[in-house]
Amino acid sequence: MNTLVLNNPLIEHKLSIIRDKNTGTKEFREIIGEIATFLCYEAMSDAKLEEVEIETPICKTKAKKLDENKYAFVPILRAGTGMLDGLIKAIPNAKIGHVGLYRDETTHKPIRYYYKMPKDIANREVIVLDPMLATGGSACDTITMLKEDGVKTIKFLCIIAAPEGIKKIEEIHPDVKIYTASIDEKLNENAYIVPGLGDAGDRIFGTK
Ligand code: PRP
Ligand code: URA
Image 1 (cartoon, protein in one colour):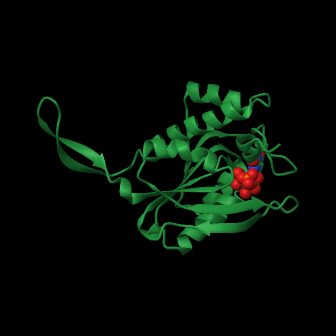
Image 2: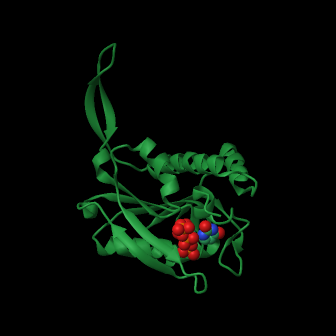
Image 3: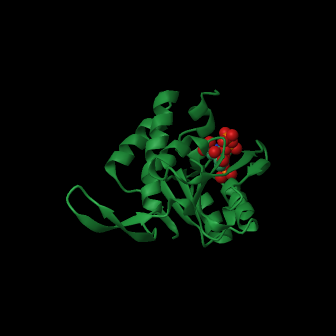
């Protein structure tokens, strides 16, 4: 399986807080950002580093640094922007593209309304952000658009994934690795994740 699940008691504790329907917008948003930072650390575990010479207060030494200009974050609007702060904390110089998609309420298929990428996106490693991977339609369409723009390395970060969404990415985009804090049980008849956390966008922005 091309999916990495964060396996950590503190993450599980934080997930329990955001799953709870009584958790308010402020705490929900903060925890989404915190978990996103952890997902970013995992997603960077295969990053290539360059050797540089630096001077500590004690002596000169060789050290290793990341080329931060190689990366782009692409949140899927709206809910993906809730993860963005957590990623920018880890890699402040990454560029940011946006994809606007919403799910049609009856067909559950994604409808595209916005797409804006940095000019040099084809030369960057792209990390796509969306807290919820449900049917996988939004993630797969986003990845397809990025590949059409010439992007070669793509990772997908989410807070909660449904088995159906993971299967769809693995079938359509087997080269894309998924990083998630949880794989939940299933989708319900409205294509919501069970047990999930409800509508991530509404809970991040307080729109319901
Ligand atoms: C949610 C979520 C994903 C999508 C996941 O967005 O943030 O983008 O649904 O579902 P899928 O895997 O079945 O495509 P939504 O369409 O509710 O839009 P929003 O972020 O604006 O609330
Ligand atoms: N989008 C959400 O915000 N939540 C789900 O459970 C499924 C799609």
